[in-house]
Image (cartoon, rainbow, N blue to C red):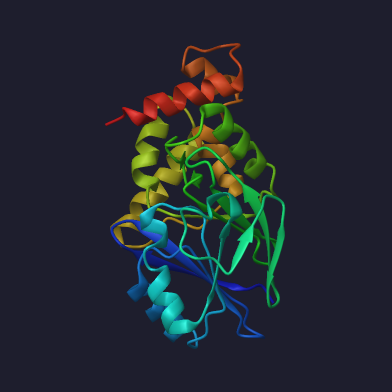
Length: 256
């Protein structure tokens, strides 16, 4: 049985995710932006929460953790590299480590770029990647602490996952990311199709994620920095993919 994923809207545009194994009742939350909506989702799903997995130290991903732990007794798990900036952890994890919470299995992938200690969690049983602020639909995180080269290498690691993997990012940024993507990739038919879908979903008040990695590889310019067609549209024919990525990130930072 594939574990169930619930998308939990938090704060203004954050998402947390509740992953639950139907047979055992084991439940895990990824990121803790806000306690109340997460606890409400846990109550609806049966009231059990075994662990919280944190992707990085930014306040809008951790500020609900203490209240959730106090109420549920969930174990708090996060990156050893960020242990000094996270709430007190029950387990500190490293890149490449396998992590099991009951029957739910995860692989920890370090993705420096947005922050130096950022990690994401690949859940093969759920065919899901909980990507925090590294990979968004049609976008990627700002480079607050890492370099363009670091973020590009992080994205390459995620792009190599099975294409049917569903991406579960930490924010609802798809519409604004899509406007930028269209500005640099205006001839992309798959992107136009995705943006039409996003418009319908947002008009109905629905989240635009999860979304498959396969679709992101066709539409997300930050995953396509190695595509010669995208380099040509930026006037960067023959430039290394990492330089194309860096230019995309610079343009996105000033895009309005």
